[in-house]
Length: 198
Image (cartoon, rainbow, N blue to C red; front, side, top):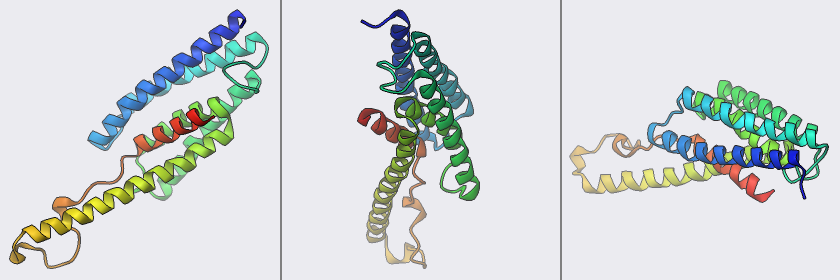
């Protein structure tokens, strides 16, 4: 039978993951529709989910050990994993954004600490690193699918238009060009894969 603090830790963890699920849907929809992540929403996601995660580790620490929330890790280790993974993901994505700004947006950089915190809480640094690897795999597959659709759309449009209406170059037609892959759904998908597989 779990003690009072262990129960509080579990409730806080459930609240944190429920909030993360809500933010997953909301921010993914916004990113797909608008191709941007508003700062206000990303800040709210961080300011609601991260405190719930840390409250869970604090309650676990008051309980005096590891439990349902943390697996075999002591509470202090869970708290450190959460904070360090959040900082590492944020810093890593910030460097990537400075190095290749066309690949990800500023909103994705601001969202990365949330992904790091949740995966670090769930499974430590290895889980956070696995999520980052999965993110780029998901984005690569999605990008390849969009590229195939773009090429098929360009061929269909070329076949439908009279030859005189076609552009002189063989570059893809702007009318069927699709925008870059929205990265927030990739971030969330990777995080959930890691959380479910732990």
